[in-house]
Length: 385
Image (cartoon, rainbow, N blue to C red; front, side, top):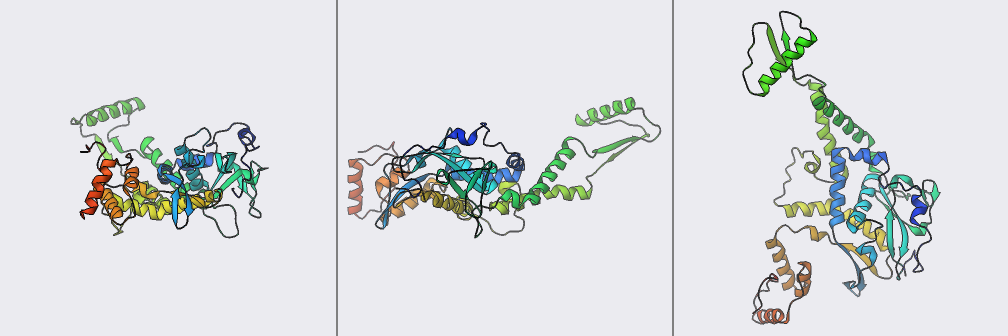
C-alpha cells in the first residue's frame, strides 16, 4: 500500500475546489513573458518535449532482476485530467523548468492506492512553507496527501525548489530588452537606412515624399537611378554601440543555454572557440541524455516512486531516444542477444514487432546449434519458409 494513500478511494478534494474561477493553467504573465524570450522558449520546450516523448514504465524488484509490470498503473498510462499523457508530462516538466516546482492535485487513486488522476496546478499560484513543507494554493492550505510536490533545484533545509525565472531575472530582462530593440530597429526604423539630400534647395514635405518614392521604386526594381548635380546619397550604418547591444541577444542565448544545460546552438547562441565536436546525432543525443535529461528524469522518478507500493518503481527509458540509425541499433541488439542480456521476443517488442513464430524460433535454435552468430529479428514482411 502506498505511503501516502491508505485507501483506494476517490479523493474528497475536487477539481473545482482548487480551480474555483476556472482559470487556465497558463494564467500567469510571468511565465508567458519569459516564454516570449526565444532562448527560454527553445530550451524549456526542448527539454519538456524530450521528456514528454520518452516512454516510461512501472517495474517491480524481484530478487536481483527487475520485472516490468504486465499491468501498468494509470499513473504510467495516462493520469492527466482533460489532457493526454504527452501534454501531462510536458506540463510537469515545463512547470519545474520555468518555476522550479511542480504541484499535482491528486483527485483519484486506484485499487492499489496509486494516484490515478493528477492535475498539475499553476505553480505561480502555489507556495510552500519552508519550515514544514505545507503547500498553499492562492493562500489556501491544501491537504498534503492530495498534492504531489516535485521540486527542481532544492537547497538543503528547504522544501521549495529555486525558480530559474527568479534567479536569472536580470539576464532574461536584458534579453527581452535586446529583443525589443531589435524589433524596433528593424521593423519600425529606429535609424534610417540612408539619407537622400538635395544640396541646392529645401524641399517641401510633399516633394520629399515624392522623391523618396521614386528613388525606392527605382532601386527596388534594380533600375539605374538618374540624378543631377544637386543630390547627395549617403548610407547609414548601425552605430557601434547598437551593434554591441544587438550582440547581447546572442550572449543572452548562451547564458540561458548554460542555465538549462543545452547546446547554445539549440537556442540561438554559439559555442565559440570550443573544440568539443560530436561525430554523430547519436553521440549528441547521448550527451544531451547524460547532462540534461537524466537528472530531470531521475528527479521525477524519485518523486513518483514514493507513491508506488512495495518494491514497485517507475523508470524513464532514455535509451529510446537514442535511435540514430537502423544499423547501429540492430548491431546493439545482436551484441545484447549474444551476451544473453536480451532475448528474441524482447528485441522484437522493442522494435514494435509481434512475438516470434515457432518456425522463427526453430530457425534461431538451428543457427545457435551450428555456432552461427545471432542475427537481429527480420522485418515483419519477411516470409517464413
